[in-house]
Image 1 (tube, rainbow, N blue to C red):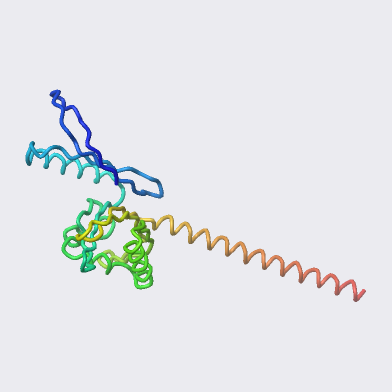
Image 2 (tube, rainbow, N blue to C red; image 1 turned 30 degrees about the horizontal axis):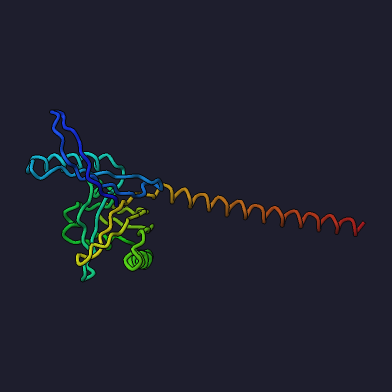
Length: 212
């Protein structure tokens, strides 16, 4: 994170101090910067509503789930922000996850839960970027997805650790990887079969020459 106070000029010519925050994150394996600007509190709730609406408009256009989650001193994890893509990606409304973050962890398939716990623990202990890929199962849709999650941690003192990051659906790329591996395996089997056939043919020819 980087934070800086700058002066901006409104349409009426009024100059106002603005707190500008820049957050670096990865989106589809490319670095992006998310910028937020906080207007003076003197403008009251009107500016707050405008900021919230602008933030909703921006996040609604991002083809991924932007999120913030916090782990308190009691090691309980809670989501503090989920963008509008939440239900489309996870099959759960944000309100459900705000009330109980365990609903997200329950989606993770059994064979990938250990890797999730390991990556989360290492990110917590070392304050390193949390990067995890795994499958989730959405019972209501009878569907499974591959999810890529990347989040940057920030030590918030007595309040615990907060991660800001993004979740994306990488099922299509994973399917392509599986198809490519299968294609390579099939090609390798074909080479083995051709080599064996060639050896058998050579053996047959040597036997025929020896008989003659």
